[in-house]
Image (cartoon, rainbow, N blue to C red; front, side, top):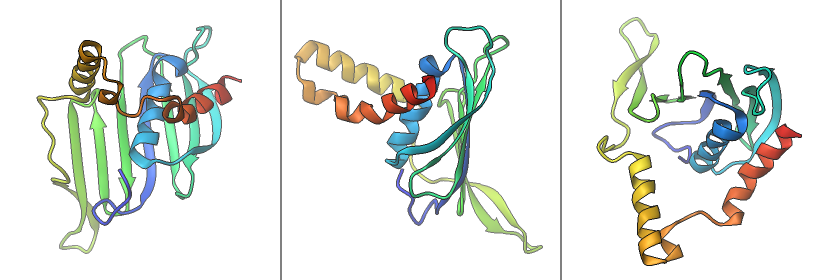
Length: 173
């Protein structure tokens, strides 16, 4: 998601994940790389929310290279429920991707009759809720297994996963 005229500049992101940095936190890193094509910098572990587990669920503060916005990756224990939500605040609105991508909402900044900037539900892009990213990925993997054509699996080379793995290993020490 390049920052364009529709969204404006990213000002903050709050992302919630569960179940370990290596298990699910890495998906957050991949999503950020995919959406913004920027390197994550200044990663600071704030807390461990699953003490005693082999794969800690860390809350991490960081930023994206060239973007002056704080990114919070909130790690939550899965003792009570599972949560994977993304909440991006831009100068022109807010994008929420909730409940494992089953609920996607864009709100545009508008000025109300009192002169206050408020968020109004709006449509940013078309989204077919019947075809989830997981269904698309499954279909692409199945097609590859049946055809043997590696070109059917875009962005799966070592070069594409290298940034995510660097982040994973840098925090794991």
